[in-house]
Image 1: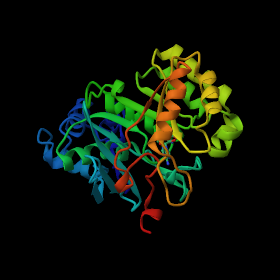
Image 2: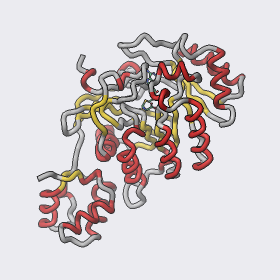
Image 3: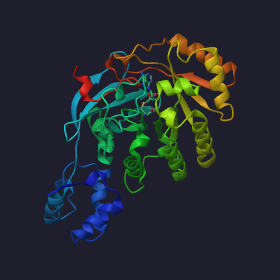
Image 4: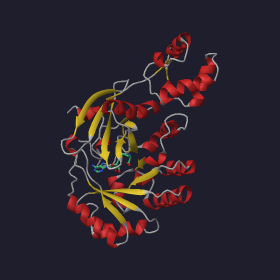
Length: 344
Ligand code: SAH
């Protein structure tokens, strides 16, 4: 029989499922508490349920786990990269970073990616599948268990395009922030997207309170389309309009990611075009010198990013150069990939 992945189910779905097993609905609250507050890994740990009911649960459901295939700790900062093996043998990467305010985790949302951004390693071996809700939750749980820490911030910036796995990501956010369970404030969560406009609009309607980050990287349609194929479908003017509407609806300011690539997007003209694009938005731009990946020739120094930051500041746009963390373990932005490539 097909065992149901109970960690991916929200409270309502568990309520329906226990009723089908002829148990009272309130049992679902107990199970949900064990799973999402106590974070047990076995039905036998649910000691306020009868052993017959626990057996019934075991016959119908499974509590999934992820296995640590590799753990790589950076020598230059506190960053740790986990390579997790999923139950079907696929792998994804998760990065734990230390910040002033605590621990931040960068999780993956898909095995591989179909977006095809030229500078990003996650897309090179193609797309395999979406992650399930439990596979996203478990990147947090398994990392917290292993590192013996509590995560205070979460970014959906690992492998994959979160808005291309919309339904699962929405259910993941619901369970993550549920007052009856994990209670994480979505103000501590950032979703980064290459710009899938209909999903940005849907997300805005949900008024979740999370931070939306747009991977911009080029202020010009033809340049951006070359770097990021998604721009051909959803060009800049429409993307900017969706971002303005996102702010108007949610009150949450959108942030922009801009990876400096020398000779590609770092000229004063680029800065002027970018300032023009963002002038109505009080936007914040996160600059990052593009991280090297072995298949591509893109490169940038920190100085180039700082120079671009000064251009922007003179044009009245707030910008910061982000720290690069974990570059020695290929844990930096755009360096994560799924197993097909990590084995070489
Ligand atoms: N698909 C989502 C999230 C994953 S990428 C997105 O596109 O936003 C997370 C961030 O890293 C994005 O801003 C992405 O553009 C950036 N990135 C990808 N490759 C990079 C590289 N080689 N150097 C620096 N940043 C990179």
